[in-house]
Every structure is written in C-alpha cells, then in structure tokens.
Length: 89
Image (cartoon, rainbow, N blue to C red; front, side, top):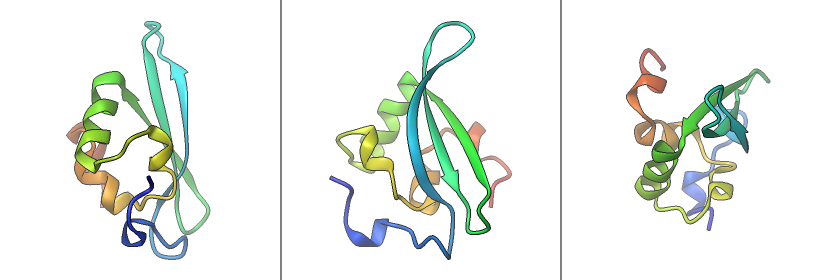
C-alpha cells in the first residue's frame, strides 16, 4: 500500500524517496537507510534506527518500508525524528 496518489511526489518538484535498504551501524544495530533523490539529481541518505522506523511507518499509516518508495519528502519529513530534519527546508 503506497498511499493515495497525492502522497507521491513529482520528480520535478521536490525530493522523493528513491530507495530503502537495510544496513548495520558500527555497534551492530540494524538501520534502515532511506535514499532521497532531489530534482537536480543529487541524492542524500537518511539512516533510521529500529524504533524510529516503527514510529515512521505508524505515523504514515504504512504496512512496510517498501511503501516508502516514491513518497514526497514533504510527506515523510513530519514523521522523521527532529534531529534528521533540523535545518532542512
């Protein structure tokens, strides 16, 4: 369930979630890495720890991390931990 069309971003207007992948932090904890693609082609990665991932999915009413792909950053940002969004915008 990727959500209604209005939650999807236009690649020409704002950053979108291009990919999600799992990784391991230096302390061996699992991370979800969200890759954002910006209209100019630049990419940025946002690492999220387990608890933050569960909160994000709950706040966005998504069933799976796969459902994040294609979402507009404007939809994602309010549900992210504040330390990841501070100064963004």
